[in-house]
Length: 395
Image (cartoon, rainbow, N blue to C red; front, side, top):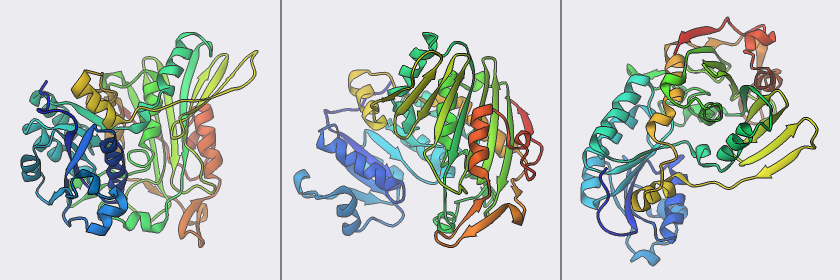
């Protein structure tokens, strides 16, 4: 594997510094304060203004008073800054080409989720990065939680008895403006190119990948079959209310999600066992253990930042937490959703618009999402009159 030249801090280029990119900008500043990285460049079609830079990144006086170089040309920016790492937080269809452009220059990667809009594009990216010999971390931050190895240890120790399945639930809310924030938002395809920006593939993708990780099914070959039910209350192409069930040789994983919740809450993963269950609120790194013969036990864990882990991998040889192949099973789910029929529009009587937030809610969806995670059932199996028969695809 190629290693970056020079010493710490490692020069970093951020592609996509607005929207969710602002989080990456703040995180880079945090790691810059620790002496691990240096923000060398920002790639945006329209450069960030001085006000945007100082609002999100802070004062540059401590770093020579010189703001980072900005350019709309990603390749030339990597060259001119001698970047060691590129953080890519751009529209989903651009991920593969930008990742390969960085890899061709020997630049290591933190690539935002979902890594690609199709399994073919994912393989093109992952195979190209591997051939170039650069490190690539996929930005599923929940997989940096210290709760995951702790839960795996509990499962191995038989705390829950025999694991009978894993469910996940995500009941979130997104308003009309969410689908107008970018040309690709809420699209399955744009100008003939796959986007697949649905509830399970983007905003609540962490629920899917975390459930699969706790199931021990992370690679593409772990997936035997996938059932999907894709629906929408909003006037969009993609799904905003959906569920998926993945069958593997080890058992089943069911994930239910909506962006039309009546009362939005924290998403979670449920590990079901013959002698108890574990609830993992993955955004909070909080775990609740409930088992026969014991009182409930709640534990909070720490988390390893994925960019910091990438730096440690390059400088100290630490193992990467989320290399591309560890997201292969998730990408099989993305592919099943891509190949499924277009989401079914919910009947008008199933949803209503909440004026206060200018958003659509689906009546009773919060309970259905929770029930799906609890029973590993799909919406149609739970008696939702608006749910179509599930679509099944082979792994």
